[in-house]
Structure formats: structure tokens, C-alpha cells
Amino acid sequence: MTWLITGGAGYIGGHVVRELVADGRRVVVLDDLSSGSPSRLPAGVPLVVGSTLDRAALDAVIAEHAVTGVVHIAAKKAVGESVEQPLRYYRENLTGLQNVLEAAVAGGLRHVLFSSSAAVYGMPDVDLITEETPCAPMNPYGESKLAGEWMVKATGHAHGLSTVSLRYFNVAGTAAPELADDGVSNLVPMVLQRLTTGQAPLVFGDDYATPDGSCVRDYIHVADIASAHLAAVRRLEAAEQPIALTLNIGRGEGVSVLEMIAAIARITGLTTPPQIAPRRAGDPAGVVASAELIHRELDWKAAHDLDAMIGSAWAAWPHRP
Image 1 (cartoon, rainbow, N blue to C red):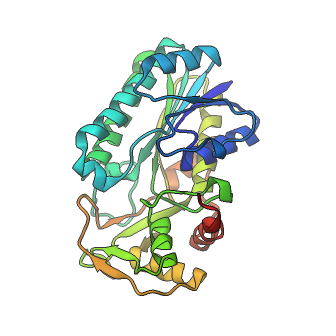
Image 2: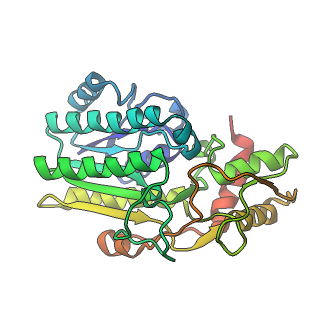
């Protein structure tokens, strides 16, 4: 089988590509390089520079590389930006996905793995979020991911595709310096950037209904995200009849922003006290996963703890472009 990975030159995509290649799979990457880099790809992995908004490019890569399944990771993902630019997010995340699914159906693909997000849940009043927790996204990014899940499931049902949607919780860390997150929209690189330039880390709101007033999240190592994708790919390949799964990827452990900053200070030795800033639009107070269903369905669980996430990001920090 050959898997098309959209967004495969990005932070998460690069880890997924490496995981699948290490397990012996053929992979081709489509990426517009807006946030990706060819340097993340293993030697020999074909890279097609193009956008999921370009249906002709998708059709061409599927035909040329005899693609049999797609892992759709390419998307815009900044919550605050989605509030400011909702139409851009609906276009990139939904029209792009529609093109991927239309190309998959036209090309006779049987397997679709969709990168979704915990943002679909919004702010549920539960200690642990299961896949049955009602979805009420609070921002256009989360709305685009929930509508994407609906699109994937409906397409699978109508055309006999096996589908899996993976709801990422908060991703951190790196499996290798060259795969590190070189953006600053995720919390760990955001804090490291501030600390290493002598600035106070920013905490967006300290008046949430949480134990210390800062937002609580379930942080998951990007290497675990990649291993979950491999487990999902194996399940899709083994399915004798079409399947449709929606699964959380998390650790089931909540960490507040203030706790994360304290852990980063402990590991790096950089101890500038944080600065409280106004809340960001669309940020829920607490989002923590139940990871029981993915363990049952894919025999998968996270292998890395918080220190591993922070330590790997810190070790890779000097190698950032």
C-alpha cells in the first residue's frame, strides 16, 4: 500500500511520515510548505509541493503514486486566528478536506485517516472527555474540525471507505531535533521563546474555573501522536469490512498553564515569573481526554510523560531554524 500524507512536511506530519516509513510503508507527501519543511522528510520520500485546495494536484499525486490510502493532516490550526479569520479556516480546513475526499473516491482509495482535534468538544463540564461527550466547539477552528469529521464519516458510509478520525489533545515535544515544532503557537515553544529571550511567559487568563485559574489541558507527546497514527493505519489496513472510528488521543491527565510553566522552569533552569495577559477568544477552561476507547480499539496508549515532552523540546531548541 501507498499512503498519501497531506501536511506531511509539518511538525506533526513529519513525525507521522517517519513512523510509517520506519514500519515499512510507502509514503508520498503533499504539502504547500506554508508551515512545513522538506528537511523533516526521510530520504527517498516523494514530496509534491501543492495545496489541498488544488483538486487537480490531488488527483495527479494519487494516480502517479498509486495511492491506496490517505492521512489528512494539512490544516490551519490557530484558535485565535480562526476567530479573526473564520472564512479562511472554513476554506482551508473544509474545502481542502472536501477535495481530498473527492479525490479519494475518484481514485478508488479505501482508507481515510483524518486529523481532528479536541477543539470539537468546546468546554464540556466533565472531568474526562469521552468520545460520547457532546461536541460544542467554541471557535471556527473547532467547528471546522467537527464538520470535517461529519464529512469523513458520511463519505465513508456512502462510498464504502474505512475511516478513522483522531481527536488530538495538546501536542508537545519532539522525537528528533530536525522534527521539532518551529512555530510558536503551541504552549511549550511559546514559553521557551519568551524565556530564552529574557521575556516573561504569558498566561492568557488567570480567572478560569480551574484550581489555579489558568487553563487546563491534556498534553500528549508528538511521538505518541505518531504511534497512534500507525496503530490506526494498521487497523484500517486490516479491516475486512468498512469501519468508522472516532478516537481521542490523550493521556487522561490535566496540566494547567501555570503548572506547565513551572515544569519548564524546573527542566530548563529559566525561571522568569509569568505575566498574566487577557484571555484569548475561544479558549475553553479545561479539556482533558479519556483515552480508554483508543486503547480498546487500537491497543494503543501514550508512552511519554510531561518531562519527556519538555525535555525533548528543550534539547531541540538550539537546532531551530
